[in-house]
Length: 340
Image (cartoon, rainbow, N blue to C red; front, side, top):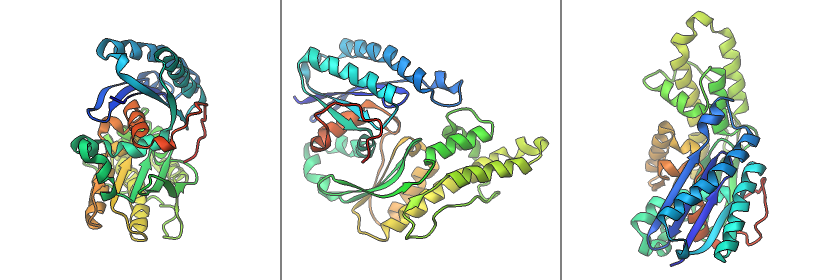
């Protein structure tokens, strides 16, 4: 049956999933710590690790109540990148399970999981022919946008991944969260800024966009955050509440336009068969819509993950282990700074 049980615990979400090459995702559950960390305005590493220690056994109990563990053929776990304490909780649980079930265990790169998550909907519609049809959409230009990463990569026909552009400082998701904090909005900032930006005017304020030229294959969002801070210092407190909606719309539009601009440049430099978007910020509707427009402009398909697979989840880890076993690690050793 070749069922794969995966555990994800790279940051503050505990996840378990089981993937079957014939049935797809047969079990998945993610336990969020959002309510706990919202109080502190961001993820507290020590608390995150403690919560994984609490949640992972409960998830395993839930799995045992819904799924026959004797069907598991192998296990997969996120090795990194991520928070060392959080990763270690998932790794230790996976190692114990592998011993108990007497099944092999491999380590999966967290970012490869995100990148391949955009393929899950296509797999679900074409499971029997998926392997043979991968060549239809490779090489692919993939934009991975999350709280810790902003990358444009090329995925080729052998599933090798080449980084074409990356952030030199803050990631786009981090820019959303830090911008929201400056605006007095709760954590996580991305959804709050998007909510406040609805029906507002995104052209009210002008913010800087870093590295606009094609030869500058990199992103930067720290200057954007600083620009917002300086602008807020000039806005009178009594008028701030009336302006926050346009501020959110303008700030969000700048982040999205920066991402789309660099993606467009690379699409016109090389030939790609498809475009993909993944990572937590892939839930942003403006970004999804602009990526769809860009794909149509270039006459190529766009691959998007299910919203539930945009954030950290174990389904993407199980799918990556199935999709790309040659790039998993048989040495299950914590690697919090593992690079693509």
